[in-house]
Length: 355
Ligand code: SF4
Ligand code: SF4
Ligand code: SF4
Image (cartoon, rainbow, N blue to C red; front, side, top):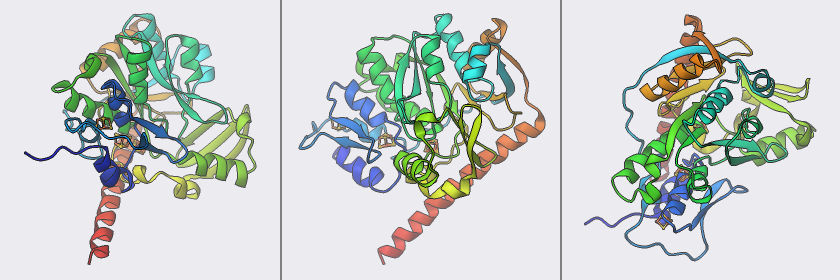
């Protein structure tokens, strides 16, 4: 029988090869298994194992559930696209674009679809922090994109082990949606620790063209090079290939993303998914006018949630313009091709080095 792989193999095959998406899936899995040997080292932006720790020979789940070891298989799903805006003024004011994510989560919480939501808050100086929230105030705190890695899947372990929640919404980047799918595929038929597979009810994926190193983008570039006081930043937004940095009403910076390309995480350069193909509902800002969200309903359950939120007046929606849908498809194709090309480049480089 083939020997089981473990965290050492995850390190050598994924993390040290610049493929890690920092989704947090390995850390969450190890915690759910009640080992808790792994954590995220945010200064190095990588998962790490407790020093000197040896793993049980029959485990290895952190390796097998990693979406960068092997991708999960995509089930054919729906692709219904809408232009959406929240009907809640407080949410609209606090949120990026149309506030669709926050309103869908508020609907899910207030109508007992979920008990808690895993989102990312600003810990201060725009440092992302995973939070499990159970009310609208918490949701508003987590509104807006952060563009630096947070390892959202660690929130699954928090929701189950710390808060004892039975039904949770997970909001994350496309890699985090894929990582949860992989956790399910590997975990459901084997350990299913703490019965985790029945806890995540709703998955909302956020459009993503890339995520940046916190130290390089926020500290090195925005704070040191551009002289921006991070504690005053109220919103970061990337739209139409431009990064906008706001402090209240004032736009402190607007720069093309080519300028910050060097700060992109290596794991993002091989990423092929723009919209979150493994979500129930995907949300972003491309393809719709300012102040609106683009929403893609991908599963029957996603449609149920979306239609009920609409019926109960949490959101307003209309089918997306065909030019918007075309743009989203174009960006999906572009990201997929870029990810494949980067993988090919890396493969070639390795072959040349081994000659
Ligand atoms: S991609 Fe996710 S599961 Fe894989 S090593 Fe990185 S954090 Fe862990
Ligand atoms: S092999 Fe098991 S115990 Fe060891 S780090 Fe991975 S999940 Fe944790
Ligand atoms: S670019 Fe891909 S790997 Fe990077 S954060 Fe976005 S979805 Fe994850």
